[in-house]
Image (cartoon, rainbow, N blue to C red; front, side, top):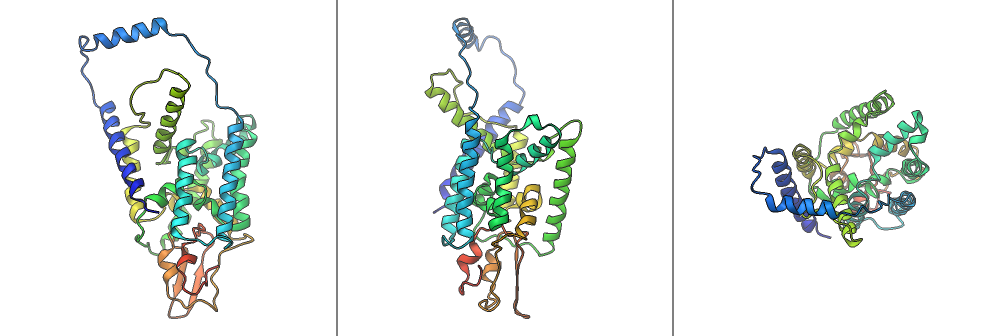
Amino acid sequence: MTLRPFRTLLLATFALALSAAALRASPREDNPGCDTDLSEQVDAYRENYVPREFYPEPPRLSYIDDAVLAAFLVLGALFAMGKIKPTRKRGLAVSAAAFIYFGLLRGGCVCPVGALANVCLGLRAPELIGVAVAILFLLPLFASLVAGRVFCSFGCPLGAVQDLARKKRFLRLPRWTLYIALLTTSAALVLTVFAILSEERHFMICALDPYKVLFHTGYATVSKEMAVMRGYAVEHGFIIAGTLTAWLALLAVLILGFWIPRPFCRFVCPYGLLLGVISTVAFKRRSIDADACVHCGACQKRCPTNAIKIDRENKVAKLSNLHCVQCGECSAVCPKDAVK
């Protein structure tokens, strides 16, 4: 599977989005005489407009999302347990499917950040969340107890974007950055809970999500095409969600993520921290067989989250399930099949 079509489409979307956002942000001089025909068309449309009944999204769609997420998690568990041989191409195929369904078709609805904030809100006002949201929050946690952080690589739309947009041969950060990541994600978790339980009920961490403008743009485009098929009157042109600042922030994060894998997951995402803590006591924890390992360092070089440390001098191999996202790339490159 090649990433060139995805990156080309992403760059084209960026160019279009930045142009549209820049035009919206720039001041325009009003000229009453230039839009006379358009104004007449708008007036005529308003006079002849017949309101149509709006049908909200049926509640069962939320349960369908839960079922699809469960299917992705089962697939991830099969990869983690070795029932399906992990390869880079297969991992990218799953990431692409998660990005299309959860990211574009559903607008990023299966969002680890949003799920955490919603459940925290439910502690204060249970009537504001439903059963489907609670299931959405609990499913990845249960999967982590069974097979580790499979949600991060097999279901999370944020993780899917970061996997699809990163370079194959990335830059490896020093080991001490793991402690920085633990500190920042812990702070994000505390602040998320505090902000949502405050009087303002602020979804602070959701506002920091740089990928939402991409998901919202995809969702708006899909919704628009479905409205056209149903016979609704819609605006012409491509829908761009978000501001110029939001798209520039996303561009900056994607450029960073091209060289450094999963920057948002590793240094911001509070839900990933919860998954990591549970993964340390999972039934199927990823480990390195000390007898089979030859300490070649291949797994350490391919690990996108820096969860593996190989000490060639002392013949020691360590793997942190707190940071491992169960992508399976270490198992795919191990010459002795020592990573289980």
